[in-house]
Image (cartoon, rainbow, N blue to C red):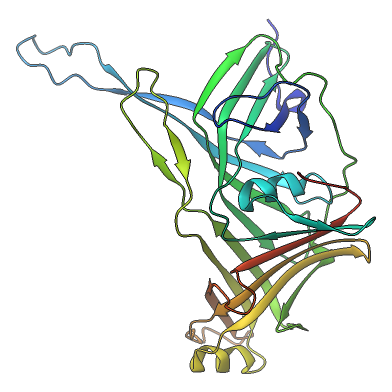
Length: 313
């Protein structure tokens, strides 16, 4: 018996033209760290009486297709995930290319994602996949990864892959040591850790259908939140929190002048934290921030990816 191993698993994807309909042609082979995307169908215990103490057979519940995918934050493939999260970018330049993604799109694209386990063989195609949220963590060392929370319409299984001859892009990962955090364009010191989460707050449209699938997953009011963990060395952030003055925060990874990824939250509000003292070590100040739409920028978040990929259309 051949057993499936994660070492040989593959994640293929392609954007759909029609929601819930996997497209034909060659898919993209995505690098990934882990995947929990898939369908599940629970059971409802029988509520019948008068049949004795042993229960009658349970009933099947609705089918849910969702889960998290952890992917590397890399120079080329990550642009596809940004497109799924925020919509297609505006691309300028002629090499390097500058792809500008902005929040607030009225509609979002969907993908077909195939999780393949060739040893069995079994290939699970999740159609109508939309990215509900993306979480990024900034630290002093390690690889940069992103956690994507996905919602799909349905899942089918096949014995052969439907991804054709997958295309691949050269993998260049961003590392945490290439990261930086700026406040109003100036590097922010004494930051020991940070996190940023953008969510589309997708609303699943559940209707009465014979196949148990949802009709869609539509974006509602978006949210951009996060944390800043700092060593208390000055009152710069405390002053902004006390006066309720919004600041601009930029989280970024830079390899060189032609290769970078920048997340700019244009209007960030900081809460005033409690400065607790629990011993002789340094004092920590932790800010749970929230972002809002900037009238000047016209959006809440701008993501700028500079690389050698001509288009993400």
